[in-house]
Image 1 (cartoon, rainbow, N blue to C red):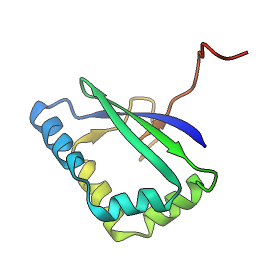
Image 2 (cartoon, rainbow, N blue to C red):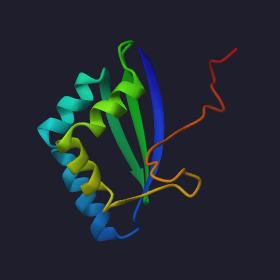
Image 3 (tube, one colour):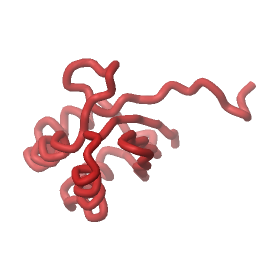
Length: 112
C-alpha cells in the first residue's frame, strides 16, 4: 500500500466553498464506487482557506492511467467532474485541464 498527496484550489468565494463541502458530506454513490473500484483504499480531503489537500491510500492494483480512462468513459463521473469545476480552480502552475496536482515529498523525519 502506498500513499499519494495532491493539492487543488477552490474558487475563493465563501458560499461556493460551503457548497463544495456540502457535496462532499455525501458524495454520489457512483463516485464512491468509481474510487473504490480503482484500487483506492481510502481518500481524505483537507482544506485551509481555499486550498485543498487530498490524501489517497492506494493498493497495488491502482493504476492512474486506467483510472483516468475509466473516469473519462463514465458519464456520471464526468457529470460530477463538470459540477466540481464550478468550485475548483487549477493551481497557477497546472497544465491546461489539470486539476489535482501530486505533491512532491521534500522531507521525511524517517528517511535515510
